[in-house]
Length: 441
Image (cartoon, rainbow, N blue to C red; front, side, top):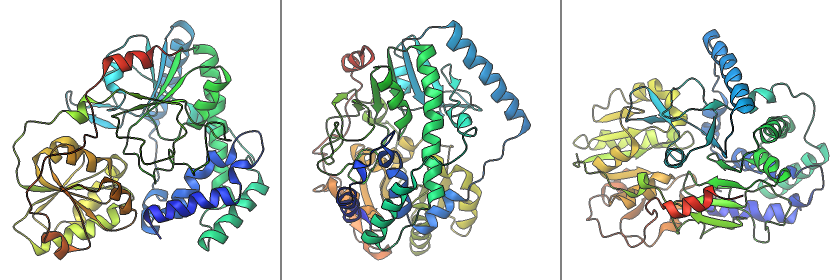
């Protein structure tokens, strides 16, 4: 079972077995539910791609980490900042060669002063000053069992009874809880020393920083950085779960536009619509009649097979296979996979995703935030009916969106005229709303 049906079943399981009701030092189920969901939900081949990745560090990087630690200590001790922004600078910055940035947080960073950016990446140069987030290094100092075994037994029973199997082990969940406590240990020190007026989070599942903010009564804002539908489990909770439930979720959420949040039960106290010029503005570039394929670490295993079949069947069509940042380390593997298809070009950082979409005549995906960007850009979008594709059913009715089950099904539908967009998923950057967000106390 995949798609929304799986999510409904997962939500029902959470409530039936009272997983949110477990009393303890922290809301353990809310801390681990994302990991449980992903492990239970993901395709086995996709899990292999994620779990088998090993990152090796060169000795020069270790020296750089030491330098980053000194910079962090200096800035936290001798500088004062009103705002702390947690960033992930993993997107190529096309305005300056060799630079990377957080595309979601950047519009805020460049508009305001007194900001300390705490980043998960340290090797790349960025167009803004940053310090390294050492929370993941602190995690390595944590040892022992942090996940209550009686709760794991309860989770195991719930998964076995609901899905017929449990795909996640105690050690895996203990690693998640241990990471939470390691991050919390670090963020408590940061909050105590830095004393920020507010914290802005440009990451996916910020349980530890939410807890640290709550302890010091500091406003915490979660930036939308992806498409949010019912199966985005970081945001999606069962009916009946509210802000008063045993959970950790920021009170404020800053969104790309008023469309978002309609289709889910998200325990948000207040939405702030700040928009995004990067997603709203349409690039003025010529269409080259290519087909843009939006990949991901989860969907790539299936999408690449589809594209090879399409490219072989229709050698007169050209395809641009756009990799997700989480797949960049697989670039050579993808290039080898398509070595016999002269009409397929694999792209990682050579061209931005908005430009690839703007130049295309049609976009192919299973699930992606780029689906919304493509529709907003006036493109026809084909959704391959595999894995969790049902998420995109929330976009219907939409004349520019079609669902297909294979090569022939796609070839009979892609070449239809594009109609005018009836609903906008994005709004321009709203300075007034952003000012309100930055002045939270």
